[in-house]
Image (cartoon, rainbow, N blue to C red; front, side, top):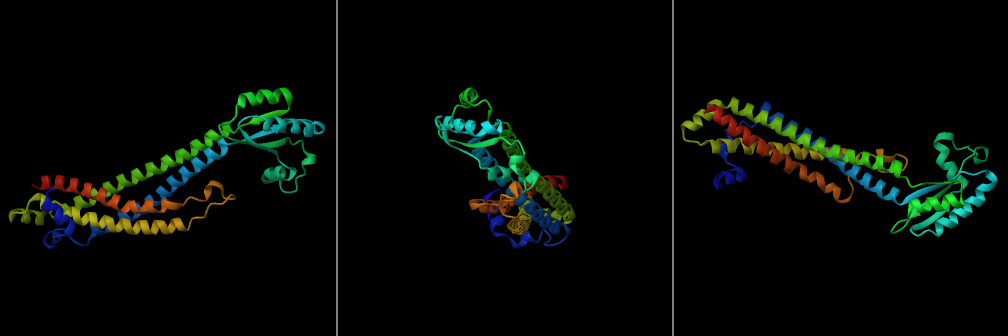
Length: 299
């Protein structure tokens, strides 16, 4: 676009604005589509950012924790637990190690067996919580020392089930970004259709403008400006409704697990502000391409 065309696009032109009808089905379609897509983009963005936080949290928390399980007869369990704690506290890279109380172990089993569970009635192993320090411990070497001194000890560093959880959260994050890309593509397609329909509906007007000397760049600029502004207005409204919906989502809580805390946090609340200008850019490019192509067909 030339300098004069850019100036007309930014400041507006009363004569050029009359080329595109201010209302009609194309105007309503543009506003509705841009608002709906921006609304969906807000939730896709919230899902992506929340999944990223979840993946980072699971990766960091589970990477620094392990569980030692003591499977031993009741009369030997206490002695083996003391030996295991001594070995753990002497192991470089282990920040802390403590045996869970019966109340804590009962709380872990409560979701499956209820709150009235008596551990004395079940052969429940003793659990030891192990917290890894810097730079970390040698898991293979620790297993060998425990196997020699504590026959009933089984070290679980959560590797088996940590990796699938982190992969699942990363997949959700990628799904969110893919959804945003698809929303942008659908917006571009709908804007292109609306712009093409408006150009076809105004074929007679365009023919008259050409007869009086109007160039295609001038005509295309009028359509581009009108559809870009409509998209910007609709996307702004959609983002407003989307952020209001995100505010109504439940806050993060241990009881809700990963189903809560799906909103924005911190500077993440500024991310949806980028959606309206990005939508306007998509509309600008889509309308410009559609206008130039359609004007060539009408020539």
